[in-house]
Length: 212
Image 1: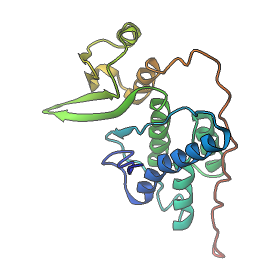
Image 2 (image 1 turned 90 degrees about the vertical axis):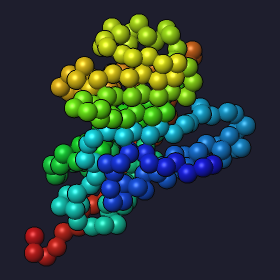
Image 3 (image 1 turned 30 degrees about the vertical axis):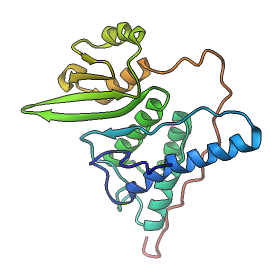
């Protein structure tokens, strides 16, 4: 198993690098489960996301460094969008989430959704005054997905295993549009799957001081 590399792209900072351990530990857990049960588990693949968003857990949100690392490690092990946002709700129950934390959750949501597709890389690149979204795939794009894609947004440039479009075509809330685009490529398993939801880990409690 090779290293997972840069999960969130160049914008990650601090302990967010620890998120790279997530796929590795989940792959190990998958191998162990297959050895125990003898049944093949759904395959996982890494997805790299490089978007111009500031992400992370600010010190003023969680002053304790060990707690921040614990949160990053918890997030690395999320396996579903439902579990991710449940953890978000618990984490922000008594404190307001700063923009960088909200962006972190949104990026992780995109990553979890993309892992249900053949998408391997999502990035925004600057070309002169414009920005272009590039989506790369593990294998040639399923042509049956192109009709719903163009119904969602027009202006795509196509290659066998990648898509390109100007960011401006995605609208003001381009992150929300990107979520819909990823949804177009979700794989159809052809049969009902057992729920993979698990109880989200307890969030670290914020430490208080005697001066508070």
